[in-house]
Length: 611
Image 1: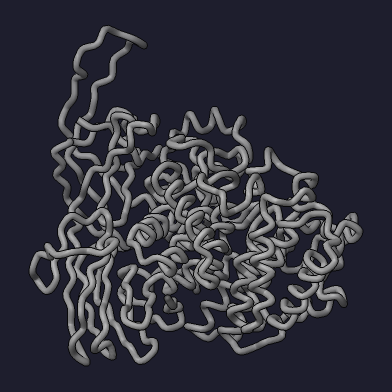
Image 2 (image 1 turned 180 degrees about the vertical axis):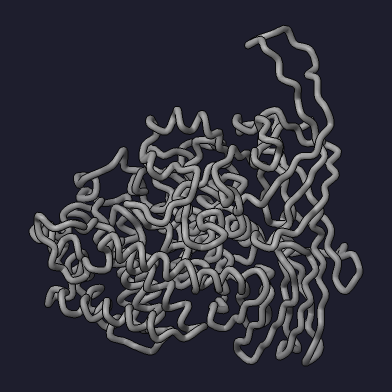
């Protein structure tokens, strides 16, 4: 199975607008904030005690992800000024790297004597993001200096970790280099890098040196508690986990490793069936930014990091390439349109690190002092964080969103997602005319596919599908409808029903008992207090016989919903004998979850009571 990459796709509609905001606002905004906080200047490697802006051990990765976002952007919309900034950073890397190929800002100027001694200090993580950026920049511009520098760095890493075994740990405390090495191998054709990726994956959970090195919380925090092929539950730090699982899926695709693929399937099912929020967020607690237990999905204390949701979408995309099962694209879609997009403001210049599903401002203010990393558990987006991994991550994610659309093999093109777009690859051209995710009508214009099949995904939320105006009652194979293409050029009309619907959680999810979420298509909705007469949101109940009206909001690029419901009358007692609550009929206003907190602070809930 081959992926159709973003550069083969020309976006329109919803995603063209988000791409433009990303290009014109997000990327420049992140650059400005990273300049103000010393991240770009740190590449001069001249910091010393007494100077401001002491480099953090993850700053290399912040800039690398920004460079990656630039690479994807300039490949689609050339920009000499952005390229000049990147070229300047690359020149500094070349100037200040060690002759052996090693480069890391922090360990060059802060702890030069401690190179590769502490597995939690992100050396290999930073190296991985630099490698990804170098590959993306080379593929976008043809400039190969950065790529050659990172090949030298990867060669040095191979020498230290494999040939000499001289580092004080065997595998990184934060996964990333594994998937980056696969990309480097794909780009250069050098299988040594693929084998090095295999080395880091295969050694995880087997190394005495890793056990004896520095740990945070426990071995499973960094997924080194068991060999990867034995894994079943998604555990530990959620971003680390999905980056590892992404690399495992990459390797399974390229090597045919069935044991590795089965482990990927198990951990994916663990996430999708027991450890994921309805928004596609993962990570239930600030303590370790991690997975906890099955069905432990608190709403107000959800961590649900933006980077984790992005990582889940990337893992799901890779699984679609190994196994064309619609459940993978379903989860990717959920993460993309909800948790990931909530991570950036509608204007594109501010960001959430953490994405709860409920905000009660009074409780939040009282409890925030007791939260770990309270600076990230915010009620309004911030322009930059001390740990600012999410802003450049969402920038590179949106810039390359076209990666998610299609894949293909010898006889079939798979349509995993629905975007207004034109795609051309291997003599095939596919155009989608659609207002998705707001409407379920998709008009395909297809050429160059005679004698092949088009496999279109039926989303798990969709109960009614029509093809060319007729309800489709035929077979689906793992959630895809396979359509024979029997002419050189062909039009195909697909309709996916998008009625508003109420969704319930498994009763084991204690936080959601007696509550429902309103969804329409792939979009999860929430209620904000400012839209509902400033009454406590816990007094609102959606009508189980739902009737809903839609109104298009141009800034959100989505519909808001006015739903039938009730308001419960308050009473003065703390406790009283049970009697049915007194309610009055009223309308409840909801907006897409990704758009919450764009109009000032407000209480917010995804899960509402129901009557």
